[in-house]
Amino acid sequence: MNAMVKAENVHKSFGHVEVLKGIDLEVKQGEVFCLIGPSGSGKSTFLRCINHLEKVNAGRLYVDGELVGYRQKGDKLHELKDSEVALKRRDIGMVFQRFNLFPHMTALENVMEAPVQVKGESKAAARERAGALLERVGLADKAGNYPSQLSGGQQQRVAIARALAMEPKLMLFDEPTSALDPELVGDVLDVMRDLAETGMTMVVVTHEMGFAREVGDSLVFMDGGVVVESGNPRDVLTDPQHERTKSFLSKVL
Amino acid sequence: MTVDTEKKGPEDTPPSAPQAIKAVPVRHYGRYVSAVVALAALGAIVFAFAQGEINWDAIPEYFFDSRIVGGMRETLLLTVLSMAIGVAGGILLAVMRLSKNPVTSSIAWFYIWFFRGTPVLVQLFVWFNLGFVFEYINLGPIYKDEWSDFMTPFLTALLGLGLNEAAYMAEICRAGLLAVDEGQTEAAHALGMSHSKTLRRVVLPQAMRVIVPPTGNEVINMLKTTSLVAAVQYYELLRNAQDIGQSSGATVEVLFLAATWYLIMTSILSVGQYYLERYYARGSSRQLPPTPWQKVKANMLSLRRPEVAR
Ligand SMILES: Nc1ncnc2c1ncn2[C@@H]1O[C@H](COP(=O)(O)OP(=O)(O)OP(=O)(O)O)[C@@H](O)[C@H]1O
Ligand SMILES: [Mg+2]
Image 1 (cartoon, chains in turn cyan, brown):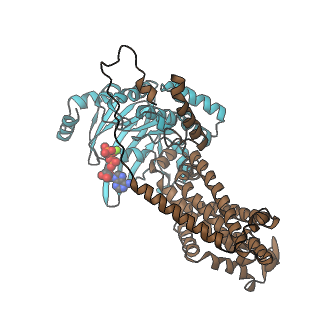
Image 2 (image 1 turned 90 degrees about the vertical axis):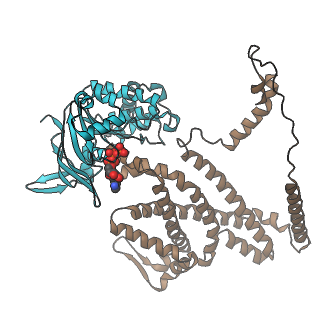
Image 3 (image 1 turned 45 degrees about the horizontal axis):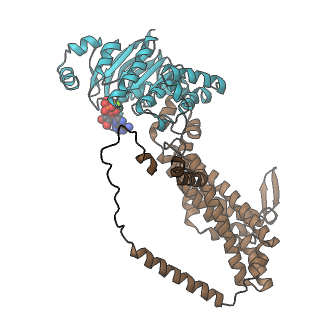
């Protein structure tokens, strides 16, 4: 069982609009898995299904061998209770396009919050680990700053530290650099690159083709709610096989 | 401030510094006229009252009368306790209204509809007169008493004001909760926080920024509304003042006196509100607004600075 995420024919609709029309893919343990595709193709929606921020309508989605959001009893599916869903989310870190740091807490408090409140870690221990994590993302000197006193790139690095504080086995990134000024993108990508080197399993929705090519182990091109093309990032990006992939890449590269 | 712009190194002094502009400022004649009119009106009012038969000496005489001070204590106590019920109930109702459970949200909707839709004075009278409907209050083995012994004027006033206030606070709190970005809830859930933890640690503290200013209004309103409970035999500031007025014959004078005390109390509350808002603004702007004292200090410094530099 070395698939960290496994999607089998995953469907998702909002009302009458079907956004995911049968996604099949597999993210292996320890790999950096990049998701690319045009706006509205369902990348964020799929990512949010992985930690059950959205409910899958049909198909099966597994994280680390366990069904997401449901429990199978015989041939019936039972919805998980909120507390059970929360328990599973502890192991999945998520980084958002717009950072979503808690504005009323300092950088350090943001990182400490979940270990203390969710895991019941002692404040002293959590503070120590939070300090170390901020150092790891290069922000040891900004621990006392509120998010509004940080640049976008710094905020995103705090957000990564906050997710790592729960010691997840899987990290989800939803366009982590899209809201950043170009000169700040590098810092965030560096942190992600370091993280990849530690063997963290990462699913990354991105428009940074350079990052996908250098760091990615697999890449999937999505369009209109389906996987159009997948494979090794270097192959797909340099020699796309499908028309739609070609035309998308010609626009973004 | 002027010093900073004038201080330049010898190298980068431009050949000819631009001359400071000395222009004739725009004259605001309207301001002078309106000030004169306002002063005249104020003078006329003061004159009219000075002419009237008012025994001004009665005001200082009774200003610290024990009945006045005691009444004020009751007024403040009632304000604080009713607001406490109002805020706690308001948050609860707001959360209920926003909940996905249709039963709880309709209960909250009905409560707000009822208590906001009827005058608070009517509600007070109803609480007061429930004794005609229920002879006894019977909470099984826990508590049993005659209704009139249980429903003291104090409890009547407290329930009447507090439960009514909860309906208003519910709407204020709901607006506050809705003002918090959904991304905040998502981020908290993604970290594995439960609904209640998310509400308590992430959403409510941010909603407070929106909730506090109108709540300050509500407190001030409540302080004044407590004067209504004289109607249910509760003796607070106004009621005691009126009693003094009747026994001493200084009817109008004690009303001025009461008004003065209400003004003093509401002014103190406004200052408290300022500091509370400042507390909940932390992290929302790059710098907190200065406290009045900090402002005074800063002004004094900026006045002194040119001399220091010279
Ligand atoms: N909560 C929702 N309710 C209704 N429609 C939604 C909702 N969330 C997303 N959608 C729709 O689903 C489609 C896919 O959205 P999604 O955010 O997954 O796209 P995306 O690939 O992440 O695009 P982008 O690159 O712009 O972020 C869009 O057409 C969007 O309008
Ligand atoms: Mg998206």
